[in-house]
Image 1 (cartoon, helix red, strand yellow):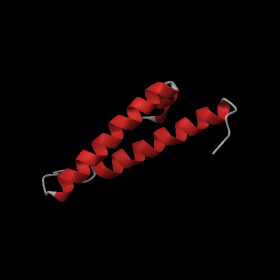
Image 2 (cartoon, helix red, strand yellow):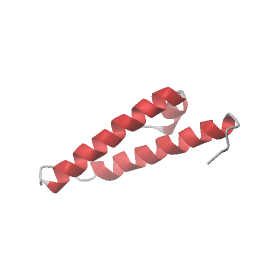
Image 3 (tube, rainbow, N blue to C red):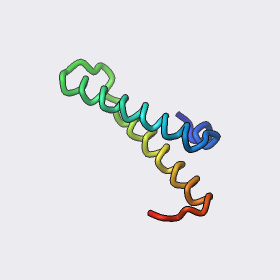
Image 4 (spheres, one colour):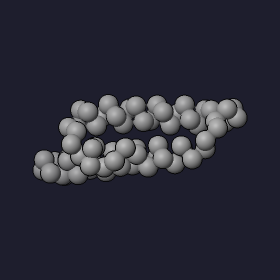
Length: 69
C-alpha cells in the first residue's frame, strides 16, 4: 500500500490496517514454514507495509503534540 493513501487515513483506520497486515504476515510465515507459500517475495512486502504504517502512525502522533515514547 502506498504511503500517500495511508497518510489520508486517521489513527483508528491505521490501527485496523496494521492488524490486518500483521495477521497477513503471520499467515504468510505459516505458509512458508509448511512449504505452501508460492511467492516468498510477499513476506518482505508485507513487512515493509507494516513499517510504513508504524512510521505514519508515529508522524501523526508527533503532529498531535503527543511526543511521548
